[in-house]
Length: 427
Image (cartoon, rainbow, N blue to C red; front, side, top):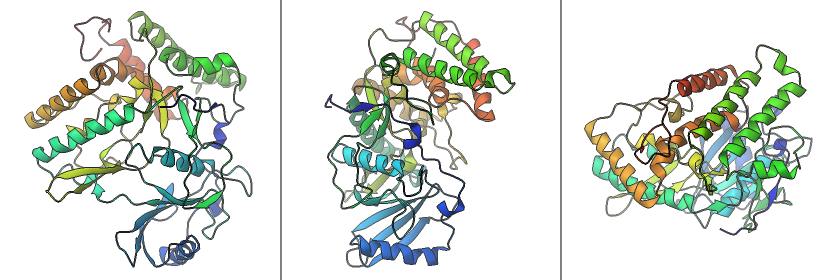
């Protein structure tokens, strides 16, 4: 990985995906009417005579998604993603989230099996009147629809490919931790776009504020020192509450932030934090079956052919990226109604076959990526639980509940120093 990545502090409003409450930012037309606009757009960008199928349509979705298939060559397929209620700071402005996604996908195109951007527009200056991207459609089906149905021989073969994917992800490293943003300047629209510039890394900071240019803060949040990163962000949220006089009220998070800071001090005394700097690696935060595309090869074997949904990809210290893939050995019968963070829950009861599958994964990944087990199941689990609140602060009541649960779990833990060689799993 080249070491000359651009590093910058940018305002988080430039990268936020949340939008305004303006109903004009939503797709509210019936699909049969909206389809006419899509066909016009496709003609304008050189994709004529394509069948259009809605995969997600309407104001309920953050992104509306449509499958595009050529009438002349059914093998030519694309995905149109239209940003619903995008954040555009001013009339005629740009949706930076779209530009960031384009930059990341094109940067990763020759490194990982990701969609290729065919066309995009980051403004409302198009027939759809909303920002969009057109990406190649990765063939196959979502592993989410398959994993609960295939036999264990197929599962082991897919696990081997997933292991290779994890190794490839960790091989992509960066000088600092942070979010990825498009290197300026970018055109607001482009057909058959082929950027070569690497995305800029924006060091983690709070939303909707002027970025701190202090060199000390840049160093604290570089990420290779996890305690320094966590402490700096927690102190930032605490200072923010004091500045806004929020700390005086019952809903203030300042006391809980203080308890998290104390937790970090106790972690330090128990040897949680490495003596050597942590590598900063690429992290797809939702590397679950729903985002893994698979297809059956001519020999009847299933192959992982691509990974989708790279929105909000970040660069993090390695232990934060090593969340174990619990779905391999504990696949839910039904898709959860909301995102489930397995780090927050107790390990599930497993059948004998699933125990063997887990043991296989754990053994293989430790051979390929030494230290993975400790990062996944030991101290790394505690660090990721803290990170889930440190990343952007705590503002919702359900988040407050999980912070309190984390603090209670920490208080009830066995007091064991993690550097003892006999400790392999858990803390």
